[in-house]
Image (cartoon, rainbow, N blue to C red; front, side, top):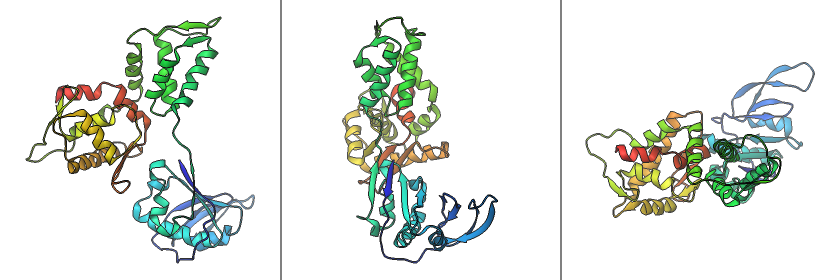
Length: 340
């Protein structure tokens, strides 16, 4: 998550009437940033009352020069055109002494600046990165130590790597490991635990069933319906054949697990999974666009993956670590390769 901090001291601009975004302000409920009028509830007194406010002018009247901060969460969800309008409002409000914090996911952290180029160089970014492998390893080391079990640190490190930056996935993997090894209660004294061959893969597969993306992966693998011309097929290093959609999925699930790819990185990975011929650039970008579209259509209330054609010559981001984990840990892609 990235936050835009610090009052932005910029020149004044007229608020845009088409903007319509509500922001929560402590003590004042919700205020509409656009040029329209919204109804809000104020808690300035014990008895709540209702009143109408409109646009940035109302926000200026209420909090300009005060300690209040306008917090815009999930700025990256706002449509591009509306982001541009809100960027103008931020520019106008900051000139009046209004302080803003804007939160976005890391791969869309520059959306605010892209919405209004005059904000460039006048913002401060505070990054909260993904969980590191070393942090995830601590979950296993401290947890097993509390139970008086000694598990090989290398195995715990491997599980941390497969957790795809998620502490919840790490916890689920270690819980499944305890189930498979019948570690139901803590030991009386420190006890060394041996991990039999095959248990690691078994734990990954079993844990992947807890958050199945089977239908979505099937749709991503099949791609949109074709009319007339059949898609070109390629040979892959796993022994399967398939089109550009399979090439992209195989590339996404390759080592190391990665949450964000620029176009060059994806091209390199696709080259690694292909034998001889590989999909052309236009085919790759169209496949990534469609893959992201399928995720939006099938899970409209979730943010799973995203294709941004404008960032770094094209950036594909996996927002939900459970999706990447399922793609890597389950046998779904392998099964689809055999079917095709």
